[in-house]
Image (cartoon, rainbow, N blue to C red):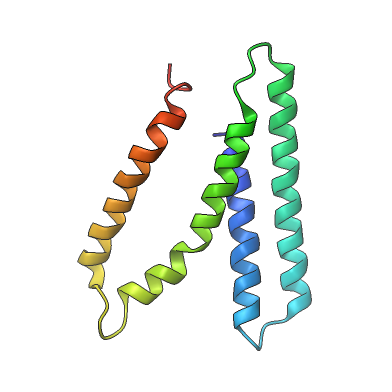
Amino acid sequence: MAVAFPIAAGVTLAITGAVGGLLKTGGRLVPLASSAVLALAASIFAAAAGRGRARAQTPAPGAGKAIALGIFAGIFMAGFYPILRCGAWGEEGLGPYGTAVLFRRGNVAFYVFAKPVFSEFSS
């Protein structure tokens, strides 16, 4: 998790910044692009540090799985707020309670998906 979280956060920031800048016509592109590049660079450095730390340890805990999970989670976290904004508010929106129920269902579904991935780390 120490490797996957910074990678997921960096990928999320880069994707949301790029998409937000492309959708908004009034946004300044140079600061947006430079921040997206810096977020991706930080993610790459975090992945390299995690892989180097895994190689230094005798029983390698599998940094490749954490890096892949971080990238996968970052892509999905980038799409969370636009989908929430479209589904929760407006005339046909779910409202706060319906949104909370669907959010909890997503948490449970992710737990079912992530349990086999992290079961080897919980011993």
